[in-house]
Length: 439
Image (tube, rainbow, N blue to C red):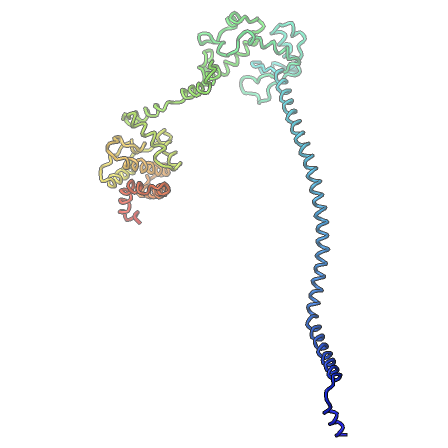
């Protein structure tokens, strides 16, 4: 048997046997690969399944959102149509409202044309029936046949507290406008302006007025009303009051250049700028030349670009603010004298206007320094106007340094730093030499 087995192993490998062995090996490798791939692909398949489920869920959600968006879009379109319709109706309603307002204003205006204001009737004289009293009074005083059928809708005192003296006007409403027009006879006769009631500056009598304007005797009651009004409102009655500015404007026969004419009238009514100058000259005991005064006026706007400082100088020049000379100004002039290395004599022209009395005594740069520094000094005085003690020179110098910092920024922005240095170096050098201010 051993010999047989040895012989069998030593038998040559046939093709059939080789194929069988290879097939067996293929099956073993295939099984191992399949098992390995199944083990590896299992998590991937699970992840893919989750992704598939998520995509399906998102698909359902997107479909729902598309449906909702379509519904919202349809709703917005419907709302836009409704808003357009409402806007059209609102525009139409506004137009109707405008027409109604105009109609109401017209009706109110027409209604007021039927009212008449009667003054001079003592309180209580009308009794309990004001309408009957006024009807009887009009018929008796006017005496016109048209008033035989006079109808008054109402009559009452004006809605105001009863005055301690005098009486309130009576407001009368005529039922027919034509009957009220009987009281417009004066206008038809040419009696339009109040000043026509005066002759030689004296309020005329009814006899003179009747002859001059051909008024009937029935207008006597109207005359009494106007005379009572003049007596109550003109302090110098029976003398004619002076013409007011509004009278001159309204009664001026100017046709062309109305605006210019009104401007001239207003300017003529205002106090002249020369009045301010004359007041300063009289108070200070000096006389300003035209050139000097114009320079002071120009300094109001040219001294500083700060609006508050400009307003202060404007008020000082036009006497809204007044300052007094004292120890404060002595320190001010002493500082300028040391900075310029020349005497700066105290004068009201510098303290008040910021302009030296003699332009030739100072250079343009020094004049600019004087104008600006004095303006800052006036500001300090006004800030401490009600204080018991005058402001100190140090407070003024600190203010000056604060404003000069802003001025330096302005000059730098304009590219004029050299100009600033040439103008203010004397002052800055002097201030820096003061220990308490130089730091």
